[in-house]
Amino acid sequence: MIKEISAAVTLILTLTFCSGIVVAEDLAEAILTPYRQKEIVPVENKQYKDECGSCHFAYQPGLLPTKSWEKLLTAEALKKHFGENAELDADTLKVIHDYAIANAADKSYHKRSRKISVATENMEAPLRVTEVRYIKRKHHEIPEKMIKGNKDVKSLSYCDACHTQANKGVFDEDTVKIPNYPNWDD
Amino acid sequence: MKRLLALMIFAATISVPVVMASPATDSLLAKYKSEGVSKIDASKAKSDWTKETKGEDGEMISCSTCHGTDFSKAGKHRKTHKVIDPLSTRVNTERFTDEKKIEKWFKRNCNDTWGRECTAQEKADFLTFLLAQ
Image (cartoon, rainbow over all chains, first blue to last red; front, side):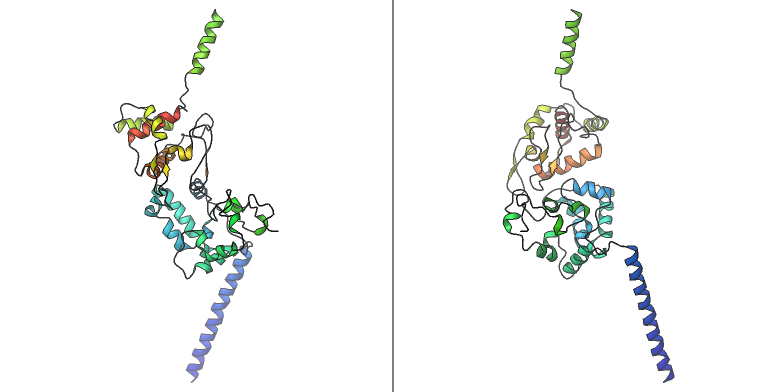
């Protein structure tokens, strides 16, 4: 009996102690990363920015989960990257792959990345940001004529066509300017 | 008379097209030669530039689809709409200064446009043609 009680007490104490560490860690993280609840981490890797950005908007790694980047950034996959040849030499590919993986949505503490991470958790790895439910939902109310039918936008994939601070990882509604529709939010 | 001569020499200098070679292009052209290229034909590159082939999506495409034919002006990628800086080294001094970059884009663009890599001969022709623009 005493043995059982002491075992139970030990268990309770262990659990309390462990969860205490977890809480302390979260707290430390919150203090050490003051921007954690905002937006998306901007691209800080020059090679990533240059290589991806030489063809299209350099989508921040935090816009897709790890499983997506794992599929997109292989030597084989890049031979036909959305229909285009985007081959990289092995050294450059490693830098870009590792950077994307280390900063993927599910590894980020930034608000939008967290939402993307949750939205993609139970689905097959999305290969396009436009397949992410959260991102789709956020654009749901924008009429088609302003995106697809807009000659200066054409698709949701061209983030920076409307999000004026997209390259800083800021996608806030206040920073949106839709070409040819100056009063889009009226 | 002396002045006239000087003027004539000056006129002759500016009328000859300036080929803006760089260490990178010299080294690449030497490499293509070592791969068997003996005679470079820039006029072949000129006609190839606008030669249309069927792209993967069924559209007829050529180099000029994205790069245009006025090399002093920026081009635009037909799918991503990304602005492509001018190919002319006269207006874009950074163009053709990085050997790795030139080879990277030859590989990608030949594959995308013609569905195969370009031969050393084709690359030598294109590079020579573009450097004279």
